[in-house]
Each structure stands twice: as structure tokens, then as C-alpha cells.
Image (cartoon, rainbow, N blue to C red; front, side):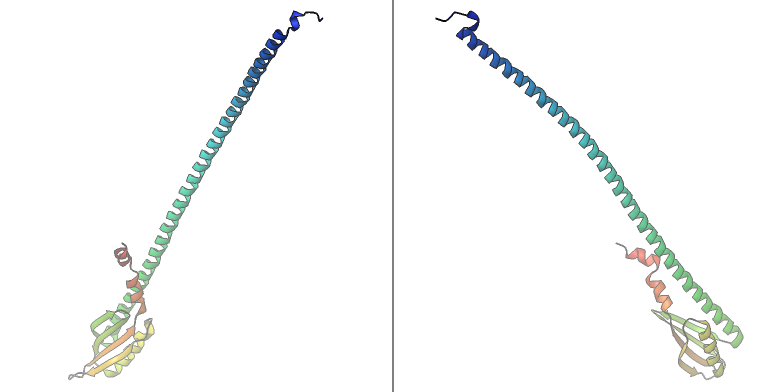
Length: 193
């Protein structure tokens, strides 16, 4: 028969197995929980770093968008200023042309006796209605004025009055007037909605 050893008693061995299972299960649970907690903490740190990086990138994107919008506004403002400068230049040229026209007519009035009765400007043409004392002076003055102006004058009608006075109508194309009127700043501002 076998010797009775109480340290290796089958009931005691079963208790040791159960205790060992519980202990190893508890140790596994603690190690697994610790690993899961560590993994979760690492994920939290990583998530927080990614969120801070995302916030930084979103801030940089907003700053770039604001810079792009400011650059677009600046470009629009510069384009508007350039357009205004171009329009002002056209107006100045137009005014210079009118001053030149006026000076030419004044000089001819003094030199040749030209008397301007009416000046009519419409769309792209100008009509000058006037009178002179001599018929031959009408052609000379028309040629002199045509040489000074951007467009030559054309004689559209000439009538000799009862006192020998010559009434005439000169006409010329005047595209500069239409270009300035069409793009004047006041007209452009009224056209804006």
C-alpha cells in the first residue's frame, strides 16, 4: 500500500490547482489590465498630440486663407486704382483735346475773323456751326484746324448769306469723347448695383 503523505493528498492537490488557477488568472487579469491601461494611456497621449497638431495645422490654414483673402482684396483694390488712373488719364487727355480745340478756335477767331455760332457734340461726332466774312477763308481755316486736331474737319454745308457772310457747318469724328463718357468714374459708380 502506498504511504500516506498528507502534503500530497488528492484533496490538497486539488486545492493547490484551484489556488494556482485563481492566482494565475488574477495575475493574468492584472497584467492584461495593466497592458490595456498602458495602451490606452499611449493612445490618449498620441491622440492629444495629433489633436494639437491638427489645431496647429488648422490655425496655419486659417492664417493662409486670411492672407489669400487679403491678397485678393489688395489685388482688387490695386486693379480698381489702376482702372481709375486709366480713366483719369483718358479724362485728362480728353480735357487737353478740348482745351486745344478751344485755343485753336480762339486763335482763328482773332486771325481770320471766325465766329463760332454753335458747337454740338453727340456720341462720336462734333459739329461746328460758324460764320466768316470771306469764302476762301473757310477752306483755309478748316485745313489749319484739321492739321491741329486728332480728326480732320469735313465741310458738310456752306451757305452765303445776304450780307456776304458765309455760314458753314464742319463735322468731324470724335471717338475720344465717347471713350471718356462711357468709362467715366461717376457713370461707373452709378452702374454698380
